[in-house]
Length: 246
Image (cartoon, rainbow, N blue to C red):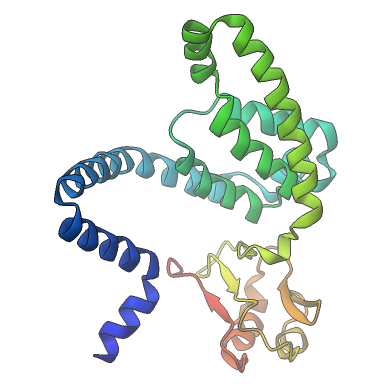
């Protein structure tokens, strides 16, 4: 029973969806069939699209230097970063959920909050293929005016989000390595702010708002032991290696 309870806790969203299907099947059986068919359609779509997206994110992690991402999409990239983010989202293909793993990778590599918001918004509402269909069915004038107003709103929204959301609040802080450890993750929710990791491995950890924070930098071979020791000694086990580590 404890294993079942833990499985439910670890998969809350899936459990809620399953419970919703059960309730719909009992009280509205005809809608349940339609809901299942719609869900099956999206599952098939995801099976076709997500492997390509995951491959793309893996290539970005492995081949694109962090400095390149920071220069073009980081906080100091300025207007250039905003324009590149807008173009990336506009020229993308696929549904919006495909953008989430890509944006998480860019964020971990140094992209700013505002540019991530711009990418997501343009991906969702101003993609070039969508604009062509909009012009066809609703007229080019409608499409152009809507595009101008939406684009202005996107840049404003990116600026506002950068002021309201801190990068530290998003669980994507990682340390990229070229060795057996690919990623190190800190769960700031569990961090007790003891500072032990900073004392053990100050090259990779620092304190921020009384919580441990990762310093993005390459792991040197002769420093791996300190990094491993910091992970091992964390009293709240808030520091972990990602599941894909070797």
